[in-house]
Length: 143
Image (cartoon, rainbow, N blue to C red; front, side, top):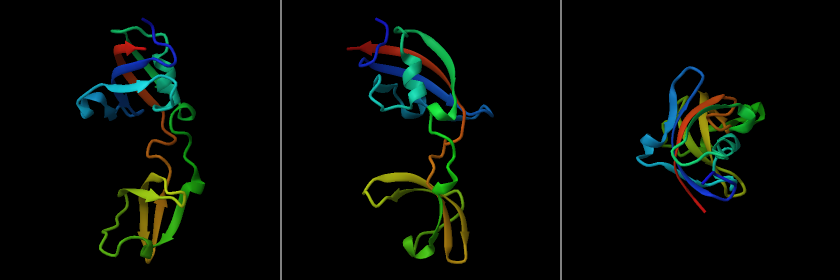
Protein backbone atom coordinates (compact mmCIF):
# COMPACT_ATOMS: atom_id res chain seq x y z
CA UNK A 1 0.00 0.00 0.00
CA UNK A 2 1.41 3.40 -0.96
CA UNK A 3 0.80 6.40 1.26
CA UNK A 4 -2.01 8.76 0.25
CA UNK A 5 -3.58 11.74 2.00
CA UNK A 6 -5.76 10.52 4.86
CA UNK A 7 -3.66 7.41 5.61
CA UNK A 8 -2.29 6.90 9.10
CA UNK A 9 1.44 6.23 9.17
CA UNK A 10 4.19 5.27 11.62
CA UNK A 11 7.61 6.65 10.73
CA UNK A 12 11.05 6.26 12.29
CA UNK A 13 13.10 9.42 11.70
CA UNK A 14 16.23 11.39 12.47
CA UNK A 15 16.17 15.17 11.92
CA UNK A 16 19.40 17.12 11.45
CA UNK A 17 20.41 20.75 10.99
CA UNK A 18 22.87 22.04 8.35
CA UNK A 19 25.80 21.52 10.75
CA UNK A 20 24.90 17.82 11.08
CA UNK A 21 23.63 18.07 14.65
CA UNK A 22 20.52 16.01 15.47
CA UNK A 23 17.60 18.16 16.68
CA UNK A 24 15.04 15.34 17.04
CA UNK A 25 14.53 11.64 16.39
CA UNK A 26 11.91 8.96 16.95
CA UNK A 27 14.53 7.11 19.03
CA UNK A 28 14.54 10.08 21.46
CA UNK A 29 10.81 9.47 21.97
CA UNK A 30 11.14 5.68 22.19
CA UNK A 31 8.63 5.01 19.41
CA UNK A 32 7.87 5.87 15.77
CA UNK A 33 6.08 9.11 14.94
CA UNK A 34 2.38 8.45 14.22
CA UNK A 35 0.23 10.88 12.23
CA UNK A 36 -2.53 11.16 9.66
CA UNK A 37 -1.10 12.32 6.33
CA UNK A 38 -2.47 15.71 5.28
CA UNK A 39 -4.00 16.51 8.69
CA UNK A 40 -1.49 19.26 9.51
CA UNK A 41 -0.07 17.46 12.56
CA UNK A 42 3.47 17.58 11.13
CA UNK A 43 5.26 20.25 9.11
CA UNK A 44 4.23 20.42 5.44
CA UNK A 45 7.54 19.27 4.01
CA UNK A 46 7.52 16.14 6.19
CA UNK A 47 3.87 15.43 5.33
CA UNK A 48 4.62 15.76 1.59
CA UNK A 49 7.71 13.52 1.81
CA UNK A 50 5.79 10.41 2.95
CA UNK A 51 3.30 10.57 0.06
CA UNK A 52 3.85 7.68 -2.37
CA UNK A 53 6.07 5.71 0.02
CA UNK A 54 5.35 2.06 0.91
CA UNK A 55 5.96 0.14 4.15
CA UNK A 56 9.67 -0.49 4.61
CA UNK A 57 10.75 2.34 2.27
CA UNK A 58 13.55 4.62 3.44
CA UNK A 59 14.14 8.15 2.26
CA UNK A 60 16.38 11.15 2.89
CA UNK A 61 15.17 14.67 2.15
CA UNK A 62 15.72 18.32 3.00
CA UNK A 63 13.02 20.84 3.92
CA UNK A 64 13.51 24.57 3.40
CA UNK A 65 12.21 26.94 6.12
CA UNK A 66 9.06 27.85 4.11
CA UNK A 67 7.91 24.19 4.24
CA UNK A 68 8.99 23.76 7.88
CA UNK A 69 8.70 26.45 10.59
CA UNK A 70 8.95 29.54 8.36
CA UNK A 71 11.55 32.27 8.30
CA UNK A 72 12.65 33.97 11.52
CA UNK A 73 10.29 36.94 12.02
CA UNK A 74 12.00 39.88 13.78
CA UNK A 75 8.57 41.28 14.80
CA UNK A 76 8.19 38.25 17.10
CA UNK A 77 11.17 39.37 19.20
CA UNK A 78 9.68 41.42 22.03
CA UNK A 79 11.03 43.39 24.98
CA UNK A 80 8.89 42.89 28.08
CA UNK A 81 9.14 44.15 31.66
CA UNK A 82 10.80 41.74 34.12
CA UNK A 83 7.63 41.96 36.27
CA UNK A 84 5.62 39.79 33.85
CA UNK A 85 7.69 36.78 34.99
CA UNK A 86 7.39 35.19 38.43
CA UNK A 87 9.70 37.02 40.83
CA UNK A 88 11.48 33.80 41.85
CA UNK A 89 12.17 32.76 38.24
CA UNK A 90 15.85 32.71 37.31
CA UNK A 91 15.93 34.32 33.86
CA UNK A 92 18.89 33.72 31.57
CA UNK A 93 19.53 33.97 27.84
CA UNK A 94 18.71 30.66 26.12
CA UNK A 95 15.94 29.72 28.58
CA UNK A 96 12.99 28.08 26.79
CA UNK A 97 9.49 28.49 28.21
CA UNK A 98 5.83 28.47 27.19
CA UNK A 99 4.35 31.93 26.62
CA UNK A 100 0.63 32.46 27.01
CA UNK A 101 -1.00 34.54 24.29
CA UNK A 102 -4.09 36.74 24.81
CA UNK A 103 -6.08 34.07 22.90
CA UNK A 104 -5.23 31.51 25.60
CA UNK A 105 -2.94 29.64 23.19
CA UNK A 106 0.54 28.69 24.44
CA UNK A 107 3.61 28.97 22.22
CA UNK A 108 7.29 28.10 22.74
CA UNK A 109 9.45 31.13 23.48
CA UNK A 110 13.09 31.78 24.30
CA UNK A 111 14.71 34.47 26.38
CA UNK A 112 17.48 36.01 24.29
CA UNK A 113 18.65 38.75 26.71
CA UNK A 114 18.06 39.99 30.24
CA UNK A 115 18.89 43.64 30.93
CA UNK A 116 18.00 46.04 33.75
CA UNK A 117 14.31 45.28 34.22
CA UNK A 118 13.77 44.31 30.56
CA UNK A 119 13.66 40.75 29.18
CA UNK A 120 14.00 40.15 25.42
CA UNK A 121 11.80 37.24 24.33
CA UNK A 122 11.81 35.51 20.93
CA UNK A 123 8.40 34.00 20.08
CA UNK A 124 9.64 32.40 16.84
CA UNK A 125 9.72 28.61 16.81
CA UNK A 126 13.27 27.53 17.78
CA UNK A 127 13.66 25.96 14.29
CA UNK A 128 12.34 29.01 12.38
CA UNK A 129 14.70 30.00 9.56
CA UNK A 130 16.46 26.63 9.62
CA UNK A 131 16.84 24.12 6.79
CA UNK A 132 15.98 20.65 8.11
CA UNK A 133 17.27 17.31 6.81
CA UNK A 134 15.54 14.03 7.59
CA UNK A 135 16.25 10.35 7.17
CA UNK A 136 13.02 8.36 7.54
CA UNK A 137 11.80 4.79 7.38
CA UNK A 138 8.10 4.07 6.87
CA UNK A 139 7.15 1.37 9.39
CA UNK A 140 3.40 1.13 8.87
CA UNK A 141 0.55 2.45 6.68
CA UNK A 142 -3.14 2.08 7.51
CA UNK A 143 -6.42 3.52 6.24
